[in-house]
Image (cartoon, rainbow, N blue to C red; front, side):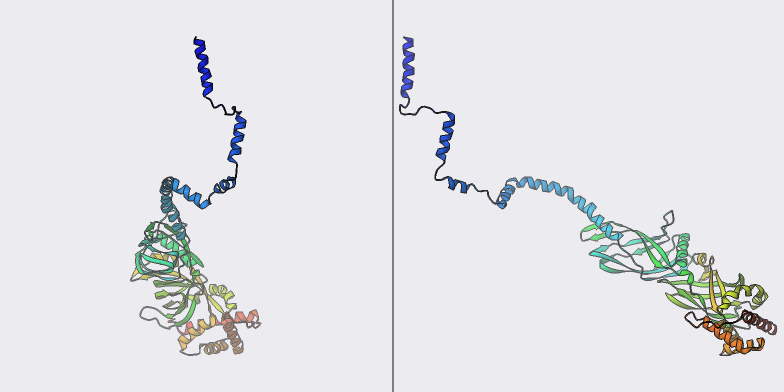
Length: 445
């Protein structure tokens, strides 16, 4: 009976099914049919609606979807890069601009006031691509070749606004000499060389708007040197038969060239004059101010004619070579430098350790000396007559004087007239005989 009930239930379940339903198909057939059904007249419309959107729309959609992540990333990136920009990149750019400054020294002055103080003026320029402000700072001048850093001058540079090429001036600033020995080393270079170094060091504060940088300046610039006063010479000489109240018997003027761009005041300078290593006198230049270019500096002093005559045997051989060119060679060596009654070691260390050699036209020198004694306005004629009487050949003397006058001019291209060695020696020796005769007739000389 149980079996009969189970069979009926199964039969009823089957009876509930749709009698018109197709038998089940395989999985492959079902998928194929579904594809067939989806394909139809609307296929082109669906394809057109699924075209990709423009890149701009997709990017906008992407950013609006992930904007928060991008914001967080930007904040993190700014937190990393901004400190690098303001603390590394911008200061490095400012430092590079400072290091590239040429700082040409166009003009200035160096006035020695006393042994430990000078008054300095300098003119230079700065060049920046953008307007900046520089705070007041101190410029330390030092010698770069000195092992131990030790500035010899500390100059205050006032704060300024710099925009492109800007002139920078330090005017009449009185400063103490921080290191006399280092200052002397620098002056040695300025005196001897054609071009001298000036090393400058400073810590700067540069303001570019609200941004502040602290670059360091360590620069060596060059200035024209004095070239050992090349071109020094006697322009005028007057010898007195009697000494004045100060004991001076000679006055005149020296041509002192300044090859540099700095005006120099060195005080009262006393030089020992010598020839052939024999001291023949001493001259003093008062209140020596050397402007750039040639300077006519008056001098007064003593010239020892007896010392010249007594050493004539040593002097003549030493003068033989320059006399061929119609010149007399003299040497000058610094003896002392005084300002306001005080010796100035910084200048003496330069001048007292150097011998300056210069040539003076012999005719100019002799005519000046003879003109001083005789009071004649034409010392050359007097000299020609005197030598003509002594030598016995005034024509030869006139030719010699003309020859020496020509050779004393460095621009003359006139060929030298041929003369025998014997005639040249006679002229030189008879000049000395004339000087001895003058000494005998005027013992006070």
